[in-house]
Image 1 (cartoon, rainbow over the protein chains, first blue to last red):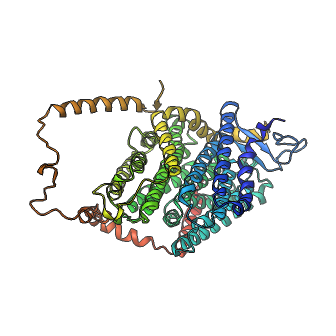
Image 2 (image 1 turned 180 degrees about the horizontal axis):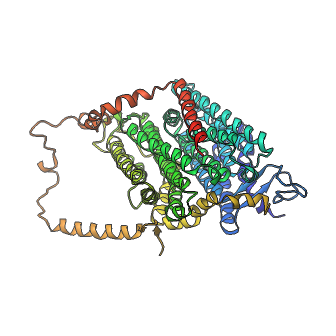
Image 3 (image 1 turned 180 degrees about the vertical axis):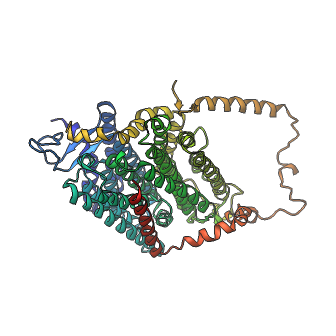
Length: 521
Length: 113
């Protein structure tokens, strides 16, 4: 039996099964759920890397559920697939790699960070379910299946955001707010899916892409899905849940929530590119996404500057950075119907936007972990109460500098490489976009200079006399992220050539996406 | 060449950048060492000079986050006041914005060809 053909399902099945086993393990030993969850996510990461290698070398992979063969997308006599299918192309696995890395490191960091809390079995079960939801959203080729995984991720997120709820009211409030906005978005997504199913009788992305005619109903479905998926990604002016949720969730969960938001961003790109592609008015929808991006970049960063809560400040930066991704991919979408412009700068803009998704997951994850490390040792998130922590938390200081330099787009870190691609390509589309993006980078740097000065610089404060560096598992998780950031910064060409460019092309080339499932039909 | 990222308008190499920074850093350190070595550790030179005023306690001498960029936010208060008010923290407003934006996108997509 060739086990490798089952890797796509094992990526999800392992954490899903472990999520239900963990409460039992928790009865035996209090520490075991964390170790078990981390190991499971480590194995899931290995499977994801193996599938990624296969996708990069042999092309997109499919996994058909319940068929005689996992590659049997169209049983004889059928014109369209009826089974649930995982369709893993370069873009899906690109997102899968982000989810796998971030979830594994989040669980690893949690081992020490969360050990003093109660209900650890529930925490790790939910963390695994959140990961399952994200993986599912990214790997599935079925739009209803996407909705199911979106719900799994949302419900697990709500519980994790309010994990500290019993002790303090704010996490529960943040969880409630996230639950409301998630429910609204899920209902709207389901309504849009209903529109597709009512018209075309299929739920498979590839089959829908083949059938879609951009009727009035299709326009309505698109106009419903774009704002809610942008909202789940944290786009302004529907971003307000983001600072609430990101600041109140435990730090490793915040890092995973960033990746979960990006899964919704992926869905937005999948819908606009793989489902509609050139059938829609690309210039109009492209500009809608660009405007979301501009608003997110500018309002996100200006709101970040005035924050005093370190995690709230970073949450606003997450909104701002999402703006870059929307800008890059929005420019690509706007010129999708213009082959010359697409070739000249559209593809580069998309590469910049997509590369920024991965870079952002890494450096924003690192920054949230450093914020978690500060909270772990000082017990506060208020920057006004911090100071001089570089004296006693040297590793955390170094990791913060790396993360801050990367998010501000300073060379030679990874943020610079993706932002450079966006600046140059967006400039050729409209110079103003590039100027705004650069101003936002400067303001980002200013904001993180404030955090660095407030938290790390200055004399060692007497109230933090006893503060030490955080435990090794937390340092290790931050060190791994820092190393990846430096590697991506020094060798961006390796990542762009092998991961980002194929991902961008898999979005652009809709016919190839459909052909993976439907063949030549 | 490894590390060379094509940007469409040119290229970027972090490795070349690092080499240039290292060379410049070495030059700066060399020039600095050429200067007058009049600094003496653990003398009066080590103490901060605050226009003759006595040094504040360590807790009080650290500038807290609220004071940083005060001038920036004060100068832009006409921008910040409505922006901060806009972030009400009220879930009704959160939901309201989803409806408003969806309506706008519906109109834009609906009227586009």
